[in-house]
Image (cartoon, rainbow, N blue to C red; front, top):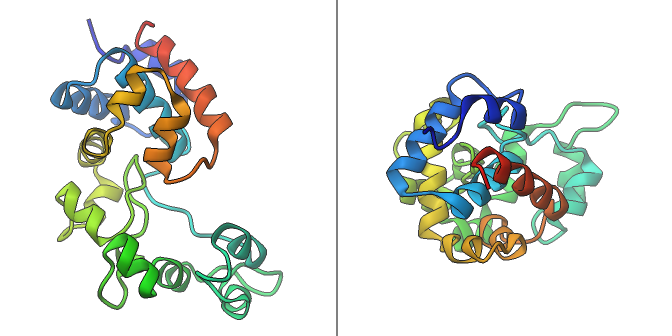
Length: 206
């Protein structure tokens, strides 16, 4: 029987991009994701990828949202207003990425060491993997766009992250909060992740 039955997945993620289910199933097979680990992985990746509708981070933030989400230690109010979306202009996503994922914070937390790394290694794939170091771990440091365009590479990188970052143990305990901390680094969207994991359990027959 299929690990991720087509009919159940279609009900779970009706707007998923073509080839997503097959890629996810292939990655689940390769990384031994079953039962609760598979359900938690699918639930988390559903939220990360906006229902498996995108593999590229959307940085179309308003000036106010930039300060609220990233704080003044990551982006100054002046830069937020200069590059964030306002009534006068659209968001300058390239500049935003290089600011919020660059500098000393980006070097220390993401391994972004070169000019332009923030944009080059912006969120990609089902996991929205971010930063040079994480792209290197996924095997895509030299071809970052692959994670944003190839469903198979995207799903494999997401499974690799889930396993390598220890998400399996809390998943087996059915602890969405603990899995979220490992996947997200915080608790952003926790309620949505809980709901998605509940639905993902039905997909895998739990």
